Length: 179
Ligand code: 5GP
Image (cartoon, rainbow, N blue to C red; front, side):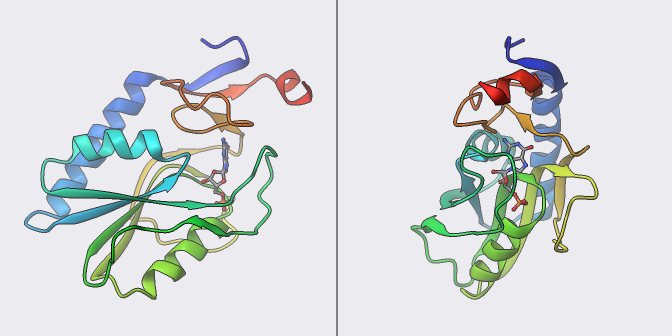
């Protein structure tokens, strides 16, 4: 385990197992259709890469980047598109791939924006969802794990741009925040 972590919440094996299950569920649901995965950078990059490989069927991948926490651990509620999609999604089956659903403010903005482009369908898969934290209701079709309200890092999730490359998800030691 990384020395800055106090505990591991989900091991690499648990994550990979859940991603395989989600991939199978999604493949069954979208059978016979061509799916566009929209990864939300940068946190969902690792999840999209694994999820895409777990879906047995035609998949395209695109990315969007929105402003989020910066290096702080509190949601600002301010969302800005930093990088837009390269693809036109009019008439497409779009599945937004998120790393973590916290207040829901980021996704709410993103979904409103994407819906205005008239996709054929628009759904969300999030790897993690913080229990009881959503300030706006989000209709999230697939959830990897429901987690308690703790700030987590690893498997794409960062603190000040660090820890994204950890293959597991864990909680930082409190003293790491003050350094
Ligand atoms: P929301 O708009 O739902 O409050 O926040 C969503 C975004 O905040 C996520 O995509 C992620 O970038 C960031 N975030 C929320 N909770 C956590 C967390 O526990 N750890 C990390 N590293 N980022 C988080």
